[in-house]
Image 1 (cartoon, rainbow, N blue to C red):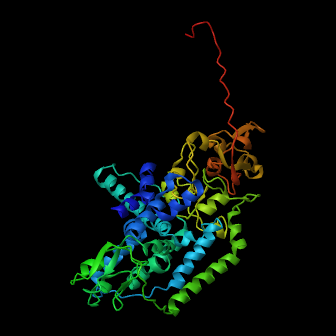
Image 2 (cartoon, helix red, strand yellow; image 1 turned 180 degrees about the vertical axis):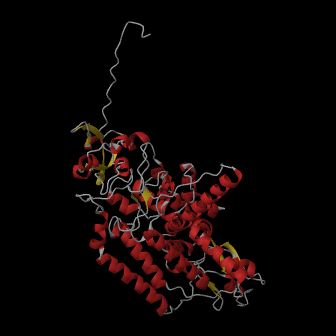
Image 3 (cartoon, one colour; image 1 turned 45 degrees about the vertical axis):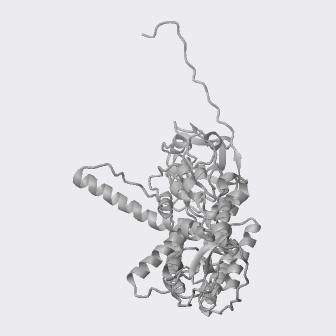
Length: 508
């Protein structure tokens, strides 16, 4: 049920779900909740505390009940056991150096104020990326096909077509590669990702060692037959020593039902018996994989300056002046580029919730530090003046919720006008699309020559919504929004009173 609810949250193609409902579903997610709490110290982000309490009481039930990526792996394991002959698992060495090393490095980077590694490792964010970049476009295509068939063949118009304005190729490739990797790990080693790579699983494994209720092997009844170990998808039961590695046990209870000797129990236990030391085995294949991954990251780090230039988009076509933006635009409520980069784990829930689809997955828009984080893409759409959904949906506090009045004054960027690119200047023709779409009238038209009107901007009242840039028909753009590295409040637009001629005479 929880997996279905999470799917619904990410695959809301009509952006019609209540943000309150979205908040209920995402409240219990560990990493987003923890980041939000660190940033705001608010009970709205206290879900991770509840997870820790549940873990101390019952073990790592988060990994088997609330983590959507973990549940997906369980589904794959179930299907594999359903349709293949190989139905047995085996005990796996814990590889403590690797998993605790990943946890320490991730925590160290997080302490410096950056959520960089969580973009690649947080299970909830990875699940969101797969949904928004891979599954959602497919769902939109199916919806539109059904809509077309119903309207064409049966004159039924109850299913509305949904516009998919853009698909990020880089985010799509990343999600596909990760999906393939996860499937391979799951099919071959079951829940190895959760107990080797995932920092959330490793972190929750620490309190799970001393949980109040735990899986135990009865030393008298257990015959070391191996049935429980064969059913354990985390490979944490050492039947030869009759021990359970509680730091890796996700409390799925498969071992309980597999034992026909009643030798496996789940019950109250506060005893801290010393367990036999487990020798680590060197697996060149996995270490090679990790070395390759770290090498790739180091290569990317060395190329940061090169890729960071991508946000300076140069225009194409015949326009004489290329558009060069000094800063990308972050969503209203993100406070600054630094705050956004430090708190966003690129789960893409804001992307899914955005009704105009102006929020799009990025690649290196913010440089390596903000890899894959979403940005305001004004080539795709613009930010609705009245909308506040992204801040209400964000589970990490990277985008803080704003009320409508504050949002309508939050200046995320400033409008820039290039007269040499404007078709009024180059073609001596009427336009004014930028002014017509500006909600604050920061762009107005003023008399220029030969009865033509030329755009005139008032940056002080611009909020950087991008409506002017999106509406501008020229290439390169003659008007665009340059991001504010730190958001500020714009001045309120002056409201001019209409002069109404009064007359004592009756008008008719």
